[in-house]
Image 1 (cartoon, rainbow, N blue to C red):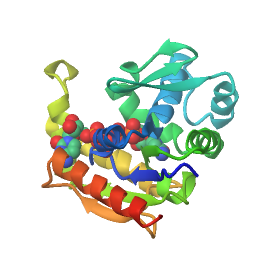
Image 2: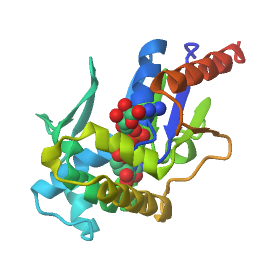
Image 3: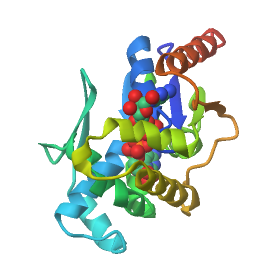
Length: 226
Ligand code: CDP
Ligand code: CDP
């Protein structure tokens, strides 16, 4: 191997996974892979085509015609769906509200997990999601299960929004809790902490504290391998 490790970061919405994964990847000179963006891009595409998540067969059929690309850039990564830049569109409330229902579809999970594994073959990847440590990269050298209270996670997400989105903090908290529940209770590769993951509650930690902590863990893991 090239002396690099893979880092898996899983946990519920708003825990800080993508912010931290992006920073840690940058600091280590690794590649950041946002697996959730792939589920979001599929969701966006299916919404365009009016294909509901209940129609799993049609979703899978259409997913065959969809090419998703994650392209690293200054902000972290750009997301393309059949060549179209959907980076901003996939963050809409509409997508937030329905993505977990498409993510229940077993065939879709198999397909995306296989793409995600390919992206991590050469090591040096920080990947965040829900099932990375348990299912996508069970051999990742460092696994983090990142959490925070649902109140704090909603507060963080709320702070990112602008008033035009017309959602209250309370409503956002309910929607996040509902999505967590769907992700935790689905049959195939649900959101669950891997046995060998380190649990990190970030409720009262700053972004810098979390990022420094994971960087230290990464260096310790790397040192243990030589
Ligand atoms: O950024 P946020 O935590 O809100 O969500 P995300 O990471 O973009 O993921 C969006 C949704 O995709 C999750 O709520 C899951 O339903 C699904 N997902 C998944 O099932 N497995 C993954 N590895 C990543 C995301
Ligand atoms: O990817 P995930 O859904 O787990 O969370 P995120 O999108 O990385 O973080 C949600 C928001 O919380 C972002 O605006 C971060 O800047 C913020 N955040 C924070 O305030 N404190 C932390 N320790 C981590 C993230």
